[in-house]
Image (cartoon, rainbow, N blue to C red):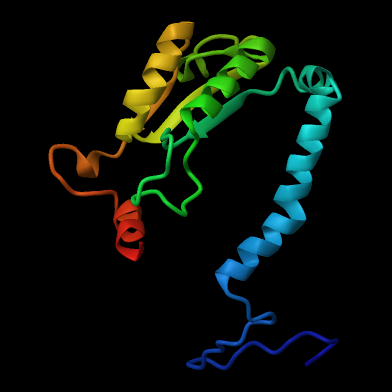
Length: 171
């Protein structure tokens, strides 16, 4: 190697060695311990210390888009372990917080009109039944809007989204 640069592999050869041979589960736990837990702690500290409104005000010109997937009281076999479920009571608390601190707008407003300060859009991915059963009544009761994106591969048949099917199979 010249000047400490690594030599490129010879054509036709492959290298399967990684500098740190870790499984994806270990990587996930490391990321969770080093990023997610401290950020969650910081968020809780800001919220319970009463500083959240000031942080929100500082970022008032930034638009937010929140994405949810499933809204079930208990995770079903189809979503267990995917970390995509929000309990309806928790979602209701999210809506209360959003209504207090943000302006909830339709995703259609993006690019069509000036958005208000503290704009946030609520979206649901995959169009799971629990969104219709639990989310819609909560939104209607508050007069709020959200967008739901459907996975068209599973409309009109009894098949599952491949990831949910795999999760069900593994459990």
